[in-house]
Image 1: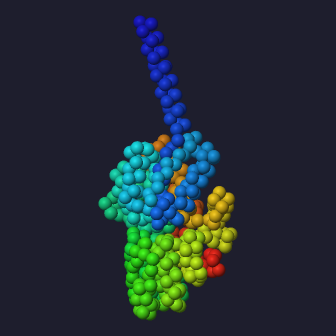
Image 2: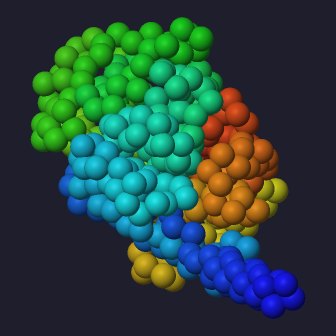
Length: 387
């Protein structure tokens, strides 16, 4: 009997050692984060800096000890600016790579393709897309696993309309891209215009790959607006800017936050001069008052970005920077549990990031207020803060 009992105790001790060793090994395993961006195709100028910054942020977190001693591991996917490709990558991340969370994709259209997939799988996903529909209603309601780090299009419209109201500009022409981002912006512009006493006297659209918008601008010009709003992402808005110059359009041209990068100035050339737009604060971080809560964070981000990549700082990259750091904060103590991770994100308040100061809730999956935006003007090839 003693011999049998001894064998049982030894076996139990061995099992505990094995289990403890497995648990210790598991605690050292990387936490996998899927990261999909448009690294090729029309949206590559947005996706490429986003990917670079995601890698930079993960390196910073790992250098500081990771998450409860476990390093983060990014698994990168190139959506090729194709929504269908984004959906395929999302399925791979979930079912093959077994990721704890996902960052990306880059475009609103791709985000809408990915939304249903990550919702059904229950995988918290921080999208780096401009459009609001990815975090709005629909089949899954407001309580979703999808978050978004860029500022809302609706908040950008509010910032722009507030400025226009102050300038007493009420008659506008609208030219928007026929993709998901452009349509989302146009919808908010039309919906919110009456609240600011604004009327659109002409509305036209263009394809994201169109190379000439002269016909649309000619129609808008003939309607006699006080200014024109163009809503889209490059390269289309840069073409609009050039065509407006060629037509001798003397009224102001306003762009959306979708062009807030050095790429727009590069593409539009001297036609960008005088263009105004709402944008996050990174492009003018050195011009902000010292009391601004983002100033120190933005200065540090800009310093690290330019040192690492030897190029002007990108606000688009900030979308990934915020997503990675918010996920890192929320992952602590979850043990990889996706439901805990989602709830932790929803409980974060006052997180000072590149895109703004984030305060989430179960009903609010962007967490940014109108003060995340400032109005800027392009002057002599540089960004100027409009006060």
